[in-house]
Length: 198
Image (tube, rainbow, N blue to C red):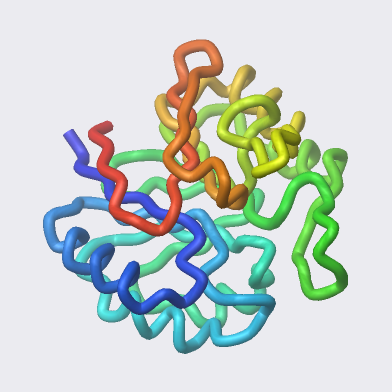
């Protein structure tokens, strides 16, 4: 059994990072579902809050940082995924970062169209965990105004791949919410320790 600690949307919050790092001492695997900094600023400082890593980690970029920025800033011991997979701590994790579908936030936001996301997700044939920044359409994806803004490409991929866990973030109003797509447990994490066994 692998003890997993997962979080999303740190946004360089020192108190949240301290709680996550304290908890991570008891984890076999740390998963970060994007948005470590704010509007493409302060990523190195945000990564410093997660260093040194007490266990192996898998990270995906959010819409607040690019893949290239995260790969350059990630602490030693972290694997950065985006349209790719890795086997870490005995589990296969497929990662997809960025905002899906396109966000209204402007040119700083790192986003994908549904078609772009689908093309990257099509690379995945099987995984224990699907780690995405954005939630699937219809689960843990509602804004404060009640709009469902999740990704149909991510929802379709979960239904096809059937991972044990689909972990995401991005929609702050839905932090802590969860649901199921077939056998898969889907959780919008938020910036706090979330524990899973797999």
